[in-house]
Image (tube, rainbow, N blue to C red; front, side):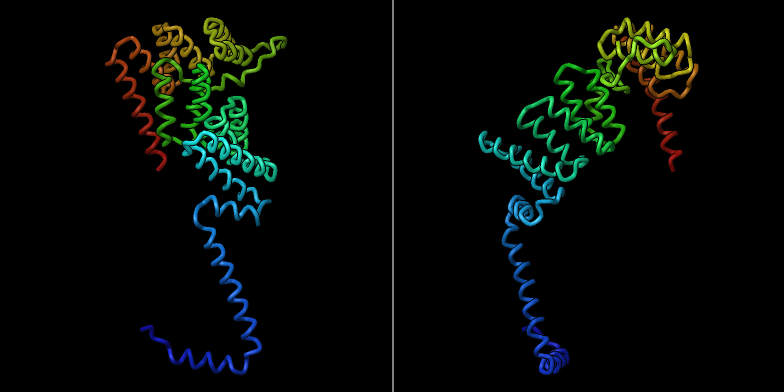
Length: 316
């Protein structure tokens, strides 16, 4: 049996008798709010019902629309019936695009839109477009970079895929899938840190300095024209030999052409100028491994590991 505090009950009764005209409306308010709570519980049978109900009362909320889109993406990804899958996907797009109409710089809504176009209603151009929007609006969000890597790798553009996998790891060093994907491409010679798609060269310029030839080399490399890329990087170094990235890209091009000994020479030159160059050490480990020299490969991996451990200690 529930015990009642007799003093509280008595005090309540004493207050109610002279204040009945105030107590009745107060009681009505409690009943109404209780009804509202119960009413919400009735629609809480699943997330879709909950979010759909919220949309009716908050359709101008970008966050509500994003939640609804997310739930439809989940349903579509788990639906076996192809017709229902497409229906859920279209509902997801309606909600995510409504979120973007309300809040045009909503990176999560961009991401969900791209995900539908990548996985459920295949449209590669649209998926790339919305992933890039997600990156522009939420640049620290690692998943769009990773998914772009998958798309470009499926297109056979491993150099672009490598860039996006490396970007995903840069923003989330614990992203295991991205790390594995980047490592797998690294094993076959792709380790790209400058977006091959962003290279724009004005060949009519008269200011053809070291930066011009560096960018020209990047352009040729993005087109898999490694011989012309090498010529451009060498010209850049001739004009100014203090840019580590030029040497790194030069070594990468030799690696792509399987000219590992030349690549090793460049990496050793990098270390003479930049002794703690992690990319040079990593490239040396890869190139010696490609030449079948496991001892040398492990030697450079150990050197790389010590530098990274030293950097980690300095953070604390």
